[in-house]
Image (cartoon, rainbow over all chains, first blue to last red):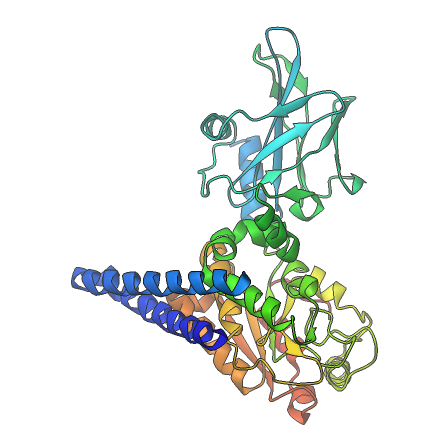
Length: 59
Length: 365
């Protein structure tokens, strides 16, 4: 499970970088807002999974 | 135009002289009992429960507290209440205020701002305000789990990056990784010292971040602060000494405390290591947490810091942090220190002078 958590963490980190980039673009052009939302949703899903795995690891 | 007391307080915060602002108001209630109200500021508002020898006074609720806060202080509230300070013993004597925390009596070490404090009948009953450093306060979190986090990272970081430490999964992942791995392996540093590098440098002091690779893996050497070793002079310490000497400084404090007190933070890319097994957790991505902490720090405080990076990976990592901050990247500058500790380049890098040339307030290395 350590590997999976590590993988998720890396994935979330990468998504966060992309979200940062897209946020900058969205601040200039509103047509990026949809992509930004999609990315944020995806990140949230991964974070939820990671939270769950962390919980399981600690029990 | 004459400055008001609030201008002075605001100025103190802007100049970063103020780390924590404490204000109080004494009100006589209908039964002529004295009530003491305490309110403060540290990048937000603190809720306080106050206990003197006889009376317990608790601020009634968030809303009224915020109203009081706004009415008397006039700052905009940035954060919701995050922290409850467990108790103080207040002693009001001769128009002065002393505060006792669990650890004993201490004097207010911050700026003294004089102000009139009146009761509800506008009678002046006390006359003092002090700016206190939060590190002197004995702080407690409501939840036991959060209290553990607070103990690990210190109150200022807990408040500043509250969401990161309580809801972001990365911090929990690193802690759970450490906990599960330590069941079968000996890891360094020990868990209680894992975040000492953070705890020892309050965000209000932080001005330099030096990124290192990983803790010492030999028994008894890792202290929780990279490079620091109280047991012997390690090769890394020897090269740091050499670099300092070549820059005209003298390495005198084995504990790194004087540097940390001046706002120099040493952080490892890999937060922990297995005993006698260097690089055992180099693929565990613990640096993601460091990146998040620094990103949060810069986004919230907009405070410039200098990043010194040891090694190629850390140089790339420093670049990544700068990229993360985006438009605010001019706030931070990277100093390339060398390839790795013990390497010739390290000692020749003149990093103390380079860092000081960027900083407004020089570090006494």
